[in-house]
Image (cartoon, rainbow, N blue to C red; front, side, top):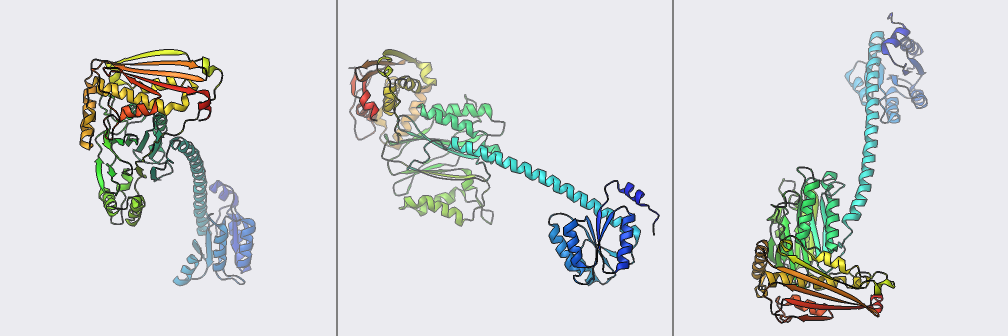
Length: 577
């Protein structure tokens, strides 16, 4: 036996005594083993057979089980299995008490759930060592369980926080015009937060702005720039800023707030159904393709710019590519996640996979989007990034959404009698767009808010006409085909950068009348003038045709450098909008 006393055993263990279940059908063996365990400073509960051992385990939850293998009613093997089942994730060591020495019998003890053996007759030193070892193992298991539960709780809290943040993010990011009938898109997140971002919004003059972006990485870290990006995009589009102005502000914003190594590859698009044009700026995303009405490949717009948030304002190029796009033609763009999908062999889907899907649906363009998704699925793609795919079909209608009228009071008639004159000189013309400021000034008159789209379109055409033909001396006749458009807008950018003289003046004159108001807009430039051509089937003169169609009165000076436009509005007409 041993000279270790119960008090000294407890002192060595330095912890609370364990509850040990001793199950043996032999009363003498059960008593001897129970006394040995008690002398080691632990408490004992005893069972005469396997069924009683299981019942005591359920009732008292012992820390260690000493279990005879061969017992009546229920043997130790079945009792061990049931005890392990009741223990669940808790670690309850089972030490088999056995005189068996055959390998097969010992293996059967382990397969039933046993953790160790104690052979008869019992050696007190070995018994104490085994109890100590399994006590340490049990305490370690309990520590791991506790740490796991803490981590699981923290993880659940993080997921809840991310879910709430995603709700806010989705409400901001999807607050625009993504439900427009001309759009179809797919966004599949690799993580809860999508590092890809897709935005769509209308300008007051009817054009649609689209942004497809891909932040570096994925998940929450990749979405940190999406909120300010969406905020700037929607606010500037609603105020009528052109794509170039929005790009400059987005790049400056992201450059200021994003940490080193985080940036946004993006495609920005302006869709102009009224003129049959599309402007595309591609900074770091795969090429954008334009397909004909039969699905044939017409044009590509490869990435020629740095991603947003990388270059300084001096190095950043905000000039989009301008292309002709007729009603029924479609634009297709996607993020890297589409082309980087891999099959079981490790091969990437690639841009060739996309173009093959396009070619396979020639003559069936309406089936292209679903066909491309099917091709990705057949490829057995294993996504390594967020996946976004966007299709835009050029409509034959005005994209401008209806603008709800403001409530009108008596002040609407008498509170807006004013005239303002603004002159923009060469330095200002090169660097800023005056149109959003002018529009906001006009929309301070509640009666004009229902005509915001028409007003902005007219302002845009007046300004473009004065700048491009008055100051830059560009020829509308160039815009007869895609090559002509490319030349026209290349020349526009080049001449605008070197503009060092000249001015454009806007005069806004509003007078209340008995049942509404009268607005006169005059736009004058310092150029040599132009010929006020009539609207025609080609692109030359389309801007002037739009002005004539939207305004109530239009007149030109003899030289052509001054255009006068008149709008009338009435209280009754406004209220009925």
